[in-house]
Image (cartoon, rainbow, N blue to C red; front, side, top):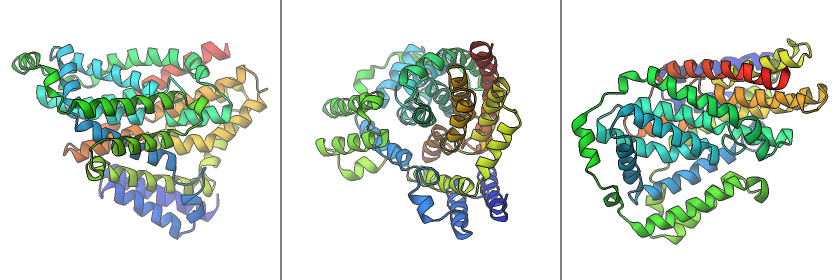
Length: 430
């Protein structure tokens, strides 16, 4: 690698260390790192702001912005209070049952929508229900972030990396359902069992608060029925457009922004109220992170690492699959899995062709998808959903540190990725 490549690695590792140790705010670390990358010419304005491969992913930024506005309007209707009471009553106030219910809902919604949209909707509910039952909210938020990444792996629209993989590999919505969804169901069952062990200290049952919850009428929580129906109608249209992406060919970001605009224009909600819930620090953090990772792409660092992993397999399909799975999980834990997949997918396309381009070689796409989607659980910055959850938690004065998330994430990632290895081997390589 060139001297500039090594320097860009040093800048990235320095910024990452600041994020991990929380010596300074993560937004400052990301912006500082991005600024230095531009200063040393590891990237430039064209690559940082306009390149689809090495620049800020504006689709992700505007998808988040649009959904944050929609959620901000929904919050004014009282629907989150309604859902909080409903969930607590169905769980009869028992913490573990409540966590199981919330993570299952999160996983299912993440498969149908995308994981970022799902956590934007479920996190406000979690804060309210945990407050009602006097439960620590952080374990529930961490579990939901991980469930969203696991559940999102099941479909083409569930996780942004899957959209990139489908585009590069010519894969359909049904391809993901057939090849990814069965294993995701198994992983969710295992994850639910792990939650019982990992978060056992959070399951403190309070009979009095549980009894109080059972006496509440959730319908009384709705503050504005007209606004609720308007909001749900727009949200339903947005979700339908997400699912029909392969047919309509509208990017999720465009759908989200259109939905937000229609909702604000068609209701009595003011612009100030609509943007009050937007997590601006989270959006800025993503922008800085994209610029830094883009610089690593521009200087050839990520491509070099990927090619070294590929060269080590010497063209053997089975070995290539396992290395790709493990390397994708490891690298997606360090850099956001969206730019990683954007960088790696052209290399995988070449590998698929080199191995005959037939159905057997398609296993490489599933290895990349499983590795990137599940590897995103390993650290606080590995996946977009993690960053969004941590941002909302900080805004609600319940900060989740990098290591508090990561100590659970590493365990979940090792277990889930390890289970995917025999699945890929037995189904495609035997």
